[in-house]
Image (cartoon, rainbow, N blue to C red):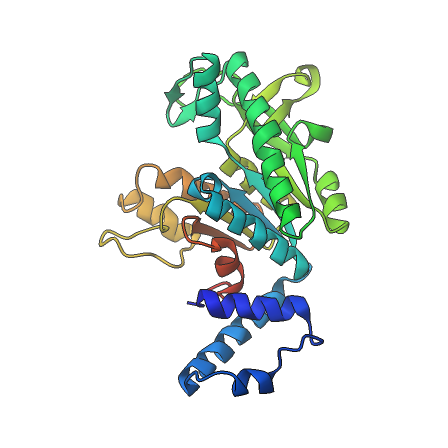
Length: 317
């Protein structure tokens, strides 16, 4: 694992370039680090260099939510991470949630809501509040934060330029979820145009209806939207930031790499249960849509995005 000091130091070197006065000779003459630490730094630097080389010009989609979004410190670090990936030549799309913020506003304005099968039943009133919160306050805080960190970002609603085109989601148990949408198509031309300009699109998961329902707003699951966007863009990687360490085995040890068949087997033998099932399902769906790698990442870790994207070298392992 790359240490925070080593990772941040190396990214700093890449950002500043060769003209920076920080040189190998200065490094050696001003430090008392052991040769083992020198070796560790070199190893980490090689990994990061390999990752940057393999991902420069590639598209990475990141679903942003959970504690990484509600903690001011983690939020600031996330925005800094996105700005850094931009500077290193990567094309980054952010898709965000905002469940706690929606809940707080619903309570504030006195609109009742409930969950069925882990999904919020979205009446027109609920969607109106969700759109106000997600497309307004939350979306602009994220895009502004990335810009403040030195990046370039534009906040978008899924309704803008028909970015997320949806149909009403039919619950498998026959429960009417209201205006909950299933993403059927993505306006990737809009996203590609922005990415070609070096701009990170920050997408809120409020979609628009299709044909005669074009004026209908749909509340979409942010994980599903991120996976679908990644698949349509044929992204190199998609990251899902969560509030857990990742997929654990029955001894509660982290499983670092899984195939689609592994995931199916682990669901079958009930190693993967409960709320982890939809998370791994979104990841496997993205792979089946053409994404090269899907990562479920602990967003509670500071600079989780940089550590995940750059810390695993060229293959992300």
